[in-house]
Structures are given as structure tokens and as C-alpha cells.
Image (cartoon, rainbow, N blue to C red; front, side, top):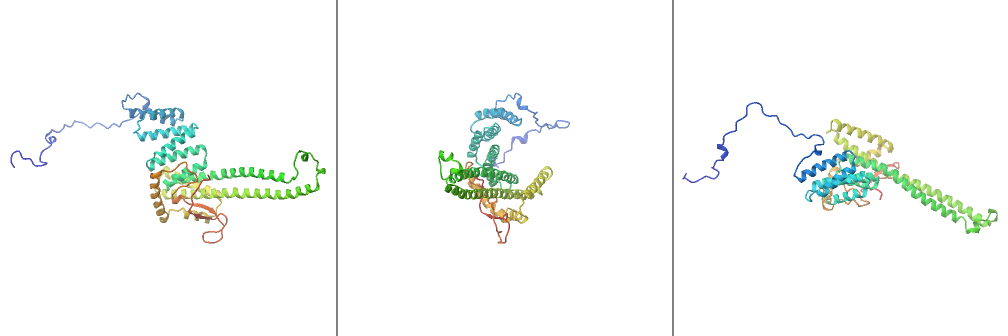
Amino acid sequence: METGCWLLGGEFEDSVFEERRERRPGPPESYRAKRCEPQWFYEETGSSDDVEALTVQKFKGDLAYRRQEYQKALQEYSSISEKLPSTNFAMKRDVQEGQARCLVHLGRHKEAMEIATNLENKATNTDHLTTVLYLQFTICSSLQNLEKTIFCLQKLISLHPFNPWNWGKLGEAYLNLGPALSASLASSQKENSFTSSDTAIKSSFPHSGKDYLLCFPETLPESSVEVSSGNKQKNEKALKDIKNRMTEERAAVLLETQMKACASFIRTRLLLQLAQSQQTSFALERNLRTQQEIEDKMKRFSFKEDTLLLIAELLGLSPENTAREDVTLALLGQASRASRVDAGSQGQGCLNHSCRVFLRSDNSSPSGSSADSRTLQVSPRLFKAKS
């Protein structure tokens, strides 16, 4: 090799010729993990980093929220929100969620929902959307708005169809919705019946006027007495029909919500049974305890065993159902990223097949055999909340 010629990669690193560091005699120093004392963030940190200072302030807000000092926590979160740079999206979302939850506890639900809607519009992935939906669920539950609560749960299930706890919450919501709708229906129909009875009373007296009201029965014409008697019978029959119709409608509403609650609980139980073999300790205990609670609730429905088996088969986790749900979930994911789920929409249900089961009572079973009025059939409609 000629002098001055170097082969590519033939040169040596300087570290090759360096002397090795001498090892200190004796045992090596023990590792000391960084340890933070309780409420360390209340001490003077003296940090010049703005982000670290805001993080410390957020810890103070979190502690105040934990202590249920919601007004103090809200002040901390609001102060952080004003100072945060526009590029710090992660902390911005976290702080805004904290603000909304504080507002819920302070009874300022409208402001909380505005923040939740803003977060939903800015959601960029499924995790963000899931967090927002849980926030909206908390707000609607605090307002005791069962229809919107159910709608939030439907959207959560459309994103996470195999989460048993969301299905369980949906069943509870339907259980509470039944009596509420029945009471509302009874109240509105009662007003209508009063109006009908008032009209009937007026129609039973063909004469009107102040002088007529002052007349004694003996002075009334015979024709008016006969007409009044005939109208009275018709009006009594009409009022009886109204009461019967009210009773039937209330029973139908209760049955419909009970069927939806029953189906939701069955799906919850199936999902818990699926996860049971992979759980231990307190997770398994909670699983088994929830299954037992579902069994107790199912007994109150008084559905026949054949009916429950039919629902379990329709909501089961068979390979055919799972494959069909996977296709729907893929489409749902594209739709969620493209346009988000509209929280203000009314009368919409979840888009996933597993949630797209509408149970109705019928007098005939799917096989054509006779069954009682509680036998269920399935049509490709949604679990919808009454709007």
C-alpha cells in the first residue's frame, strides 16, 4: 500500500487508544430511585421551565378535585388554560376536561357541555372521542337526562362493542327510562282525559248561559234531560276507553324498555363470561359479583326461559356475529374519523351491529309456533332512546 493511501473504514477511533477507567474498590453504590414526598408540588420548585411550572399547578388542581374542592380546582384549571401555549394539545385537553368535570359538580351543566362539545369537535382519534363521550355521559347523568344518557352509551358501545360495563350501564339506563316514560305518558294522557271529560260535560248540556245555570232541575225541559242522559252514557264509555288505552300504552312502554334492558344485561353477562377465564383476584371477584347481580335483575323481568335463550343467541359472540361486527366496526372507524359522532343529534342510535338489535313483543315466535306476548323477535333497528 502506498504512503498516504487509506482504505475506506480502515481508520481507528480515538477511543481504542484511550485507557480504561479504573474501577473503584469495594461494592458499587446502591441505586436510589427518585422519590417524591406527598404534596411535593406545594413546595418551591424554582423551575424556569414554563411547562414544568404549569404541570405543578395542574397537580394542585387535581388534588383539589380529589378533595372535592371543585371551585378551587376550577380556578387552578382555568389559570392553566390561559397560560398554556396553543401547541400543547395534550395538556390542553386534560385541563379542559378537568374544567368541565368541576362545572358539573358546581351545577353549571351548560358550560360543561359547551366544553365537551368543543373537545369532541377537536378529537382526532378514537381515544380522544372515547374520553369525550365518557365526559358527556357524566354530564347527562348528572342532569338525569335519561334519553341523552342512553344516546351517549350507544355511541360508546359503537366504538367499544365488547366493553361489558358500558352494556351494563345501558341496561340500568333502560330500567330507569321505563318508569320515567310511563309516568310522563300518564301525565300527558291525564291532561288529555281531563280535556275530553270537560268537553263531554259541556256537550251533555245543550243549553248554555247564565240563566240556564240558575235554573232548577224541575224547570228544565224534558228533552234536555233525555239528551243529557244519552250523552252521559256515551261520555262514560269514551272515558273508559281512554283509561283502557292509557293502561295499554303504559304497559307497552314498560315492556319495550324492559326488553331492551334485558338484552343489554344479557350481552353484559356474555362479555363478562368471555373475560372470566383471564381474570384473577379482585377483577374476577367483581366479574362474578356483577354476573350475580345481573341474574337477580333478570328474575324481576319474568320473561320465559325460551325468550331469554333467544335473546342470548341473538346477542351471542358466535364467529358469524363477530365477523359481521368487525366489518361494521371498520366502517364505523372511518366514519368517526371523517365526521365525528354528532353529540347533538336526536333519534340516532349506535351504528354497530351488536347494538343494532331492536326487540319487540309479538304474538308469534320466529319459527311460527305460538308464544306468549313476551316472546321476542329481532329486526335490524337500533336501541333508540325516546326523543
